[in-house]
Length: 572
Image (tube, rainbow, N blue to C red):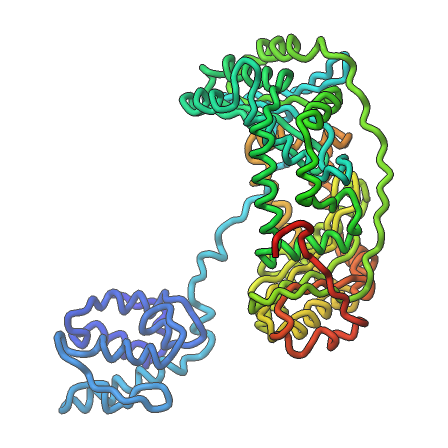
């Protein structure tokens, strides 16, 4: 038997001893493998005994069990966390005891050079260069009326997915009828059409493992469908009937209102939901179209005529149709042209004149007496995606608060142990400023300490420049994520529809990827100085006031401003 890396007399002696019958009932080959190739955690004993343990005392216990006669017990006693030499062999084997004790202790104090000689095969795994980012772009067809169609062939499965994106969402509602689009998005589908009501449509689609869905968002509504290729014509016909001939029914309106009301009266149950909602209101303002909040009175004011009027108004906008899957492109294009080309010219979206205030540099507090933790939000204004700083900002976010290696996580959670979740950064949105948001979740008693720690990390972004290692790690994480964000043709299609909706260039994904690759250390430190300004940010805390000691006044950010989150019209 050969013993690689046995470079000293003591190691050779130990090897010879283990070649014998000392390990009665055990495979001496395992001992050899552990000794030579085990993972190094800083002590020779770790490798020598088990290959991957982290305590010499634990190793000693395991060694004693290994040396015990089969079915017997070897008596041990600890001296400074190790073996007593007297316990290393049965009585009457003094020579064995002496030799073994010498070799065992020699192995514990083996020079660091021994560990440097150990193999680290994972360091030799070649890391290939990422392929050039060239997503499979869908075919774009613009009809004479301004409607745009995207076709993305994908013959991997006999499946077809389609969607229609319609301009107009909750930010376009009248405040007196806030919540209209949410009700519309539900009642549109559940009501069905004059030919087939929603319940019958459910039964038919379920039998075919197909779907037709409607939804509403901040700036759009949508209809989508999917089915097996063999059922695609029938499902498509049903979807188009629902798109152009919805039959809004009173009972489905009432059902949607009841479900919305249930959500409203429970919106203060979860501190995370409260914090997310109220943080946005601090950033955009309580009366912003981006924070318009449905109330019991506003959803109760929505009528069938409101739903019909909304549908008639928005269906005349610039529709964006996307289809992906296993289809013949010429036949699919002909089908879509037959459906949409005869529609009137699309109405242009009206210009927006939104105003975005700067959040106040103060502490706002919401008392929630049934929790023993605090949700802390540090908030500020964000930017929009047309800002040329966006690539550098995304890399900066990776350093600041995205992932386990970020500064926020390493300082507030790992080093200080003040939070079980922490992260955030400077957000950007497609056609309006996003939000600067850092979230810290901590127990009530450490609320002030955790808030100060997070603010200190934000300050460090301007006082302690980003390092080259931080830059490379953040860029690698972001660039590698493209492999998963756009790993299917359907995902690329959805991204392309989004770019079309917000009037971004068709090659935006590729140019953005290239811009991320080109971000430099100077770029990241420049945007950190420009946008990370904790002295201009607000702090929101949702927690149990009676358990927050010291109080939030200890943050020294001025008077604490309470926020009333009572629900108008709800029974206490």
